[in-house]
Amino acid sequence: MTKKLGDLKRNFDIRGYFDELGVQWWDEGDNVSEGWVNINCCFCSDHANHLGINLESKMFHCWTCDESGDVVKLIRRLEDLSFAKAKLRLEDFQELRLRRKKEEKPKREYKRVLPEGFEPIWKGKEPPQVKRYLKRRKFPYSVCQEWALGYVEQGEYALRLIVPIFHGPDIVSFQAVDTTGEAVQRYLDCPPARARIPNKHIVHGVGKANKKKRAVVVEGVTDQWRMGPGSLCLMGKNYTQQQLAYLLKNLQRDVRITVLLDADAWTKAREFAKQLAWRWETKITVLEKGDPAELSEREIEEIWGW
Image 1 (spheres, one colour):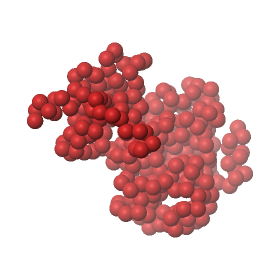
Image 2: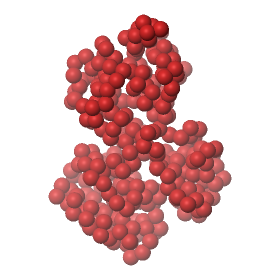
Image 3: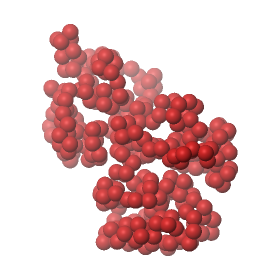
Image 4: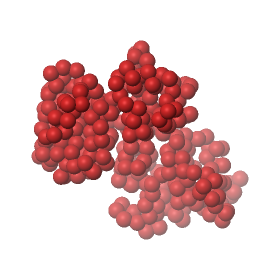
């Protein structure tokens, strides 16, 4: 059995496995050594491809958190599998096997991150509770497609909108929003063990802000839906140093920023704006009451008009 497992590891098609899973990989460029394939580390908050897999030994090491091990350990982490099931994944991706046609088995794009049973919401196919929630909050159905929202029918996240959190094209986390108005916790974050990047280590929406050259920083995902593309979500009143570092790395310098936190967060807004101002043209907009999710179209246009 040991020899067989060793053979499976040596012949494991790591690139094909990552392609099927939807994990972005690099075999050249920054932080990549010859004979290695690198990904963003799934054991820490790394988002600069510091986890390398040696193509000969099939052992991995992260140069950020110092985590290391073999491909079985890596597979178990990526897909939350038992040892036996991870071994089956090795058997599925042997380099000498004929690869299945891509159209027969599409990419899953970090299915382990999203809750089990996640279904995207398409216009005309919104679950009843989602329709009622959007109508009550006066959101157009188009927010579901704009922000790739989904839902699950059963389990912990039933009766919630599931908001995938993206880093570039990749889903790295999620937040679940209560649609009933009765839950003790309105927002549930992705468990740390499932997240590729924890919610408070990322600022959601950077890609769209870079395209628009304008950004409005808001607290929550519903504020982001109201403000539209270009808005940046902190997922809470308090920003973290990891989120600030994420912006420094990923937000282009020619983007103008408006900090628009809720009416009760003036001190935090001023503090965050001060941190941003040395690099970006930044201003603060203060709400007299409420939060951005309650703004009118005219008020939103005025904020973006700066």
